[in-house]
Structures are given as structure tokens and as C-alpha cells.
Length: 119
Image (cartoon, rainbow, N blue to C red; front, side, top):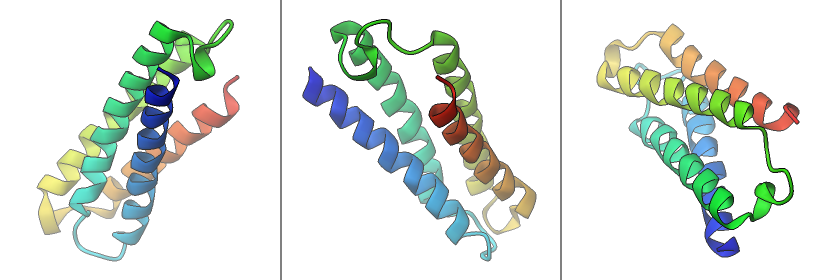
């Protein structure tokens, strides 16, 4: 089970890297890369699966007392917001505003900050 948990951790990190890097790379383009939306949904799904496997098997960050469920709830809401905003931005095609791209980038950074600094 620890291998499965670590696999979801990797998928979660790689998906957020795709969202962050893809958004920065598309800032000077008229549209948001589709990979950003896929990465956001992938990060959301991988995070949910990571929490499920961790809770079930008490591995990784879930050993001992485990992480705060409030933190996980906040990260879930932010992740869902990133995925929805990225999906809207991708569907707008070349008509997407810089503000929408900035919202994806800003929410992604907030999610990373919550993950790192909320103990």
C-alpha cells in the first residue's frame, strides 16, 4: 500500500507542476494550454486517492495522528476551484482573459502555500 500511496503522491506533484508550469508558459499566448486543465483535474483526483489510501493503510503522512482534515478540506476546495477555473479558461479558447489565467496561477500558488506551511 505504501507504493500505491507514493505513486499517488508523485502523480499529485507532477500534476501541480503541469498546472503551474503550463500556466506560466501560456501567459503570453492568447489561450491557456489544455494540459493545464488536465493537470488540475489530475491533481484533484490524485489528491483524493492519496488521502483515501493514506487513511486506509496509515502510510506516508497518515502515520500517527495524520494530517489535519481541515487542511485537506481547504486544499480540496482550492483544488476544485483551480480545476473549474482552468476548465472555463480552456473552453474560452483564444478569448480567455489574463485575469482568468492569473486566477489559475494564484490559486495554484495558494494551494502550494497551504500544503507547505499549514502544519
